[in-house]
Length: 534
Image 1 (cartoon, rainbow, N blue to C red):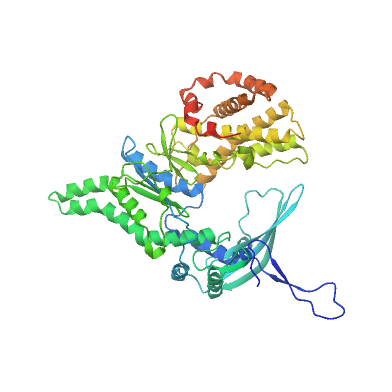
Image 2 (cartoon, rainbow, N blue to C red):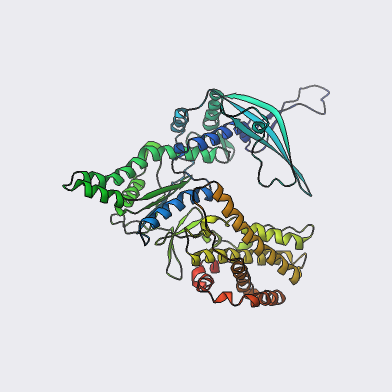
């Protein structure tokens, strides 16, 4: 029995022939890796998603997508009223999302998609040259009917990290038929084999996890559910006020009032994690009740322990949300896909609760090779990148105090990781305080430049123009203060380094008197971070 592997080719040695003399080498048959077979279909699905996003419903695949949808919604709310109106939030998560997908239903959804009879794919290679290794990456690009056949067409989009990169453009193309791709997809879904103990089982419910198509297929499945079950429910609630106004005696005046006061709502979904915002409590309660009942046709039911709301639901008194977090300052948040949504102001912060269960050192890798002092700055910069996004620093979403709080908390987590890294490295190599200080200063400058670059990058592909209202000196003050606050709890190890950090803070003392910076460094606003074990 040959079972396809996800990331590497499977080798199936053939049986040796019986006889007196056996050859030392024998033939080996290779089966292609699953992701290699599905690669063509993955490229086509991504292209269809860009051209027809409606088929994926409210799905978002990154914080960029979240920003592009959340920012206009909040701007419209603030534009119509002087104060932020009351917004009702519903958060829910599908129970065992990948394991409960109906395979036949998913295949029928794929068959409903309007696809061409065949597609042409162009292939090219990128060679990344680094000091210690050379990495070859093969790229595929879908050729559409409107594309030209010139040189520009045969070159795929190059990654932004194109330094020390060689692009090899080839006129190598291949044509794939849609029927063959659908046959491969059906085989991928229907013929997935699992090994439990010493026995093999064929998966008949759910979709295989770990392949390049898993998230796309799951998002497509729940996008179809939204189109036929959730969106009609939301539209019915939004049009209810208009219908009542049309039947009233003062139809014109009532209709104008209904249009101006009709509920504004936004639905977002990270694969199987739903977030709903609405100015109508009735609409939010209706959706909450519908999600709780589940969707039998799609074999889709929500996890009762992962509901979250910011209002009293009445009949939903059973709801005991584990996704609601209340800080030491009394602020209430709802957790959603790595974000903390403020229940009142809708401001966005980073969710650090995932670090509470284990020691922070378990999330790090420490390199003992080469020059550890030179690698330290690269490590600190890498720690800053994941949560450095405009959704946390844009003035149209967050207040000036919250923006500075997000920056300060990013530096706090980085300082904790700095301590774990240095402590693990101390058994092999002791870093000099001056070298550590230089790396910290470099990472703070990197953070500010990265914020500006990402704000500029997202403005090019969005109608919203992010606004960064933070001075470079403020970022430096927040970074140095965060390191001092964290490392002074381990001051026996960092006496000299703390002296250098405090000396660098002295010229910036006049900045620290700002009320916004005082709010950011107040321990009551970072109670979750202070519980992290490091």
